[in-house]
Length: 80
Image 1 (cartoon, rainbow, N blue to C red):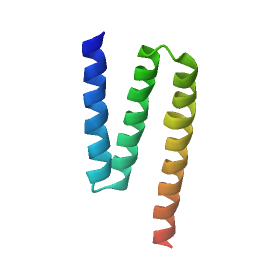
Image 2 (cartoon, rainbow, N blue to C red):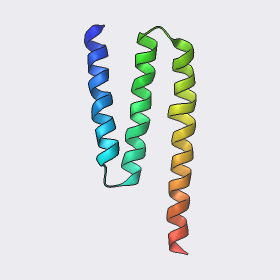
Image 3 (cartoon, helix red, strand yellow):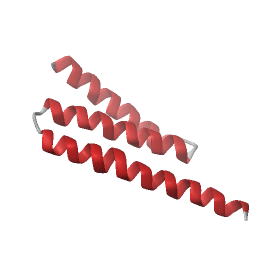
Image 4 (cartoon, rainbow, N blue to C red):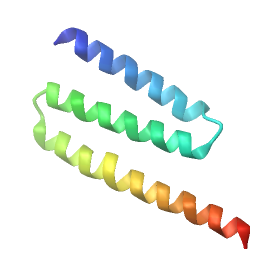
């Protein structure tokens, strides 16, 4: 289990660096969503299921949806 936690931590670091350094905003949003999903796994590994459920619904679900809707509305506004 310890190796999986280290692997998840490494994936989180890679996703965070990619989110900051991404050239396209959509790639950054996807990386942030992946970061949030990996953090859900870590919360489950730390035996905090209530925090994992909250992170999955708010962090990975709602925030990603709001960012995607905002991104597509901004692109739609540029064409007009």
